[in-house]
Length: 340
Image (cartoon, rainbow, N blue to C red; front, side, top):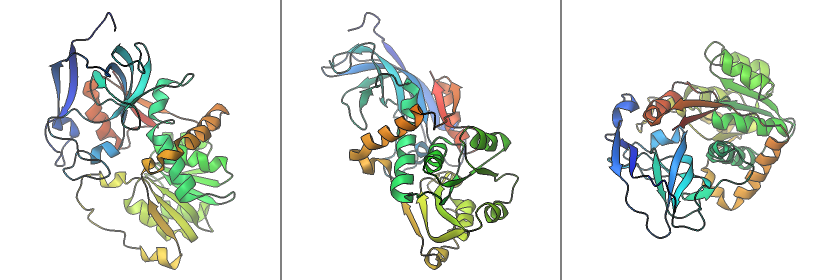
């Protein structure tokens, strides 16, 4: 037990489902009295929140790969914090932990595993458990290695290459000897992709013709397209695929994850047939038994200085909804975090 036991909690609660408006208007900050811990529970002071595009999908009424967040519930999300009170010997007071903590000041943890709370391994910067050693790193690894299956010399194009997942996926391909091309929005992001992440080139979709740039940079076609955006960029990539190309369907931020069908579908999908290409989706926890493999690979790259990461940090619980909004406006470089 801790001598400094919290009694009140601040929570960011979903009050209504978004209907095209700013997400900030859909949430309310509420206070609650904390209940005493039960056997096997621990109290976590939440210090970092992970902000991810997939959270927008959880606000829609229909389930995707997770059930929707219920109206009146604290917003679901990964976080990092410190145990301040515990009735669980596996989660001692003072331990730094990561897991599904939610958008709140204090989380009550019970159980470990994929959606539980786990102790941060020794020697790891805790907030990196929300990016390189968390969902983003695992998604990048399995998407690139299992769906993309890159070989040295192949041309790999990654959209949202300055984002939390795209930046890792593209660097995995680069480290395997691929010719790597990023797509990002704005000079600052493109400079980071080339100079920090070490990609061969980066296309600024805001000022360049992506079609022309891909024809110049990938004259023999794209072997692997790691898609985080969807929409017109996906169509452009399909038009520039090499024979037997692979498209990794990771995300679609261009849709806004608003739940409704986009106004237009993939109009050129028959190019997949003509190119004998493959387009495949996945969810990272499909590979739960291979997490140690992925984390070992990422840890090795990071330890050797082969993996650059960037953080964009917002301050305070109130900033979380706006930070999620910002992902769909391209406001973040690298991982979007909220520091409480």
